[in-house]
Amino acid sequence: MPCLRLHEAAHAMKTLLLCLCIVLSASTLQAGECVILLHGLCRTSASMEKLESALADAGFIVLNVDYPSRTGTIEALSETVIGAALQDTRLLDCSKIHFVTHSLGGILVRSYFKRHGNARLGRVVMLGPPNQGSEVVDRLGSWVVFKKINGPAGGELGTGAESAPCTLGPVDFELGVIAGDRSINWLNSMLIEGPDDGKVSVKRTKVAGMKEHSVVHATHPYLMKNDDAIALTIRFLKTGSFQTR
Image (cartoon, rainbow, N blue to C red):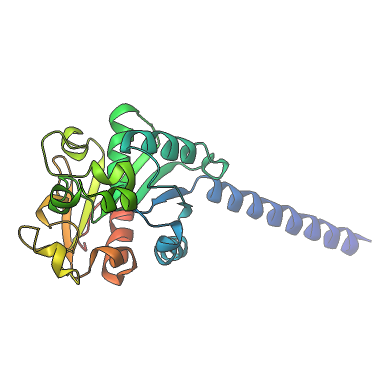
């Protein structure tokens, strides 16, 4: 009988420890860090799937947002798209909410957080953002075909002082920018000053207040699929720097 009681007690203790481990594991997941992905103009969330998978493997909770980038102005899109994403139930227990964006997605983040604060906002990585606009929009933005393809937001991405990116001012969050310096669109590149990715010059991806800037040898449409860009993105989200330490 004493041996039986000892066996039962050991079994009960084992069960209790197992339950405790499950609770602690759940708490760790609930306190995890989330990344919201925002694709670029005329793209979909499918363009961010490789990055989404890599971030999930790195331990982040990932929300890959799909939004109709051609249907509204930058301010309107930022309000509806980011506002809705931040209300997603998958983010309720996240301790930090980071953003990783491609192209237009970065300008939406700047627009939204110029008007709103969020105590849980973590780090932001922008891939190929037209932070100072693009000369391509300066030259082609008035064309009917351009307007039909790119919608209202596309037309706001020029380099003039009154363009949407240029009126947003410095960023006040922890930002890392990754630019591409390879182009397969030589027609667009003829309109752009300096090294570029076929849509945006390296220098125009920069913005006042950013923490770090890095350049990879990739084209604009494939920056988010580039292995070097993905590695740099994960490093910045985890450490706050593109540099190895």
